[in-house]
Amino acid sequence: MPAFLGRGCTIVSGPAKSNRRLLSSDLSPPSVAPARPISAVIAAWCEAGLDGCALLLAPILVLVPHGVAPLVAVAGLCAAGLVAASSPYRFTSLRLPAICLLGLLVWGGVSTMWSIDPQRTLILDLRLAGLFAAGLTLTAAADRLAAPLRLVLLLLTGLAMGIGLTWFDLASSGGLSQHISLRAFRPFRLNQIAVGLAILTWPVAAWLIQSGRKVLALIAAALMVGTIALLEDAAAKTALAASLPITVLLYGWRCRIARVAALLSVIAILTAPLTLPALGRLPAVLATADAIKGSAGHRLLIWSFVGDRIAERPWLGWGLDASRAIPGGKEEIRPGLNRLPLHPHNAALQVWLELGLPGSLLFALFVGWLWLRLGAASWPRLYAAAAGGSLTAALTAACGAYGIWQEWWLGTLGLTLFAVLVMARAAGPPATATPPPRPDWRGDDR
Image 1 (cartoon, rainbow, N blue to C red):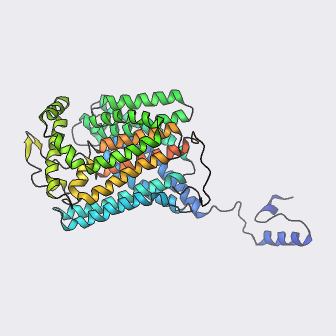
Image 2 (cartoon, rainbow, N blue to C red; image 1 turned 180 degrees about the vertical axis):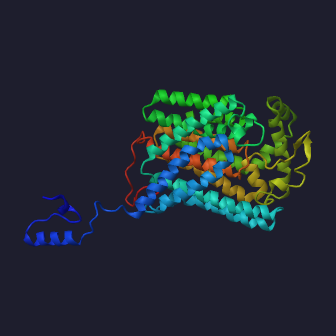
Image 3 (cartoon, one colour; image 1 turned 90 degrees about the horizontal axis):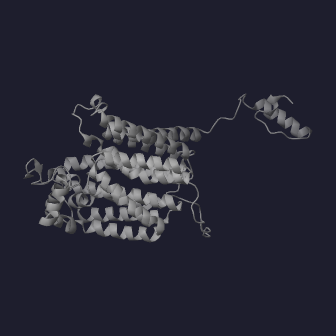
C-alpha cells in the first residue's frame, strides 16, 4: 500500500468504510506529521529556559552575585509559562505559603502609612511581589518538568563551572572579577557562591548516591566543602557545620525531628527580640565573640541596638525596609562601625523591626510549614535528610549574615529550593512503601 494512504486517515475495512477512508484522505491537509499542540511547544521552550537558569546559577553567584535577581525573574517567567501550559492546575499544597507571603506583602504595603521611609517601603513591596511570585511558580513548576534529569545534570555542570571560576578568581586575586567590577578584589566577593554551595552540598551528594554514583558523590562533596573551607565566609562555614548534625538526625528520625525543628523555629522567631539582643549585653559573650572574629562582636552589638528599637514599636514595626533609616543607626559604636549598617544581619530581628508582631507571626508560620512539609514529603530517606540539611543551612545563613529582603539572596533561596525539589523528583522512589490512597484521593497536587 502506498505510504500516503495512511496520512490523515484511519485504516478501516469494507466498501463503505473504504470510501470514507478515501474521502477523509482527500480532505486531509497534506502534512507530513500532526502538528504539536501549542501548549506542548510553550512547555518545551519554558523548560529549556529553566535548564539554562540552573546552569547559570553558580557562575553568576561567582562573577555577578546581584545578577541572581534578574536570573530568578527569568526563571519565574519560564516557570509560569510551564505551569500555564501544563494542566491540570492543582495548587492546594501551596495555599498556606502563598497566604503567608501574600500576608507579608499586604502588611508591608500597609506599613507605608507609618513607615519612616514610605517611598522605599512601597518600592521594596513591589519588588517582593515579583520575587515571591517567582518563588511560588518555581515551586509549582518543579513537578511539571518533562526531563528533570536534564536540569539536574545542567545544575551540576554549572556548579562545577562555578567552583572552577571561584578557584581561578581566588588564585589570581580577581583575574576574572576585575573585568566585571571596578572595585578592588577582596575575598569576601566570593561569599555568595560560598553560601550557595553550603545550601546545595548535601542534596547534590545525596542525589548522586541515590543515582548509584557514590565515588562521584564523594568527589563532589569534597570539592564543595573544600571550596567553602578555602573561602573566608564564616556564615557559609557555620551554615554547613550546623546542617551536618541535623542531616544525621533527620536520617534517623525524620518526622519527629522535622516537627521539633518546626516548633523550635517558631519559638526562636517569636522570641528573637528577647533572646538575641541580650547576648550583646553580656560582657563574657561579647568578649568571646570578639576573640573569634571582630565582625561577630559587632553583630551582637547590632542586635542589642535593634532589640531596643523593636521595644519602641513592637506591634506595627518601623515599616518595610526601614532598617536603613532607623534613628541612631548611623552612629558609630566602634571606630568605623555603625550601630545598624543597612540591616540587622538576622532575618527574625529584621522582620520584627520592620513589620512588628504581625509580620513575625507570618514569617514564623512560613518557616514552620517548610519543616512540616519536609517531614511529610515522600522522598527517599537519604535525600529527605539531605534536603533538611539544606534547609538548616539556608536558615542559619539567613539568621546570621544577609538582609532578608536582598533581591539576590531571595533569588538564591528560590532557585536553590527549586533545584532541591527537582533533584527530589530525579532521586528515585522513596525508601518506604507509599500508603494506599484515601477514597477521596485526587492525585498529588503539590
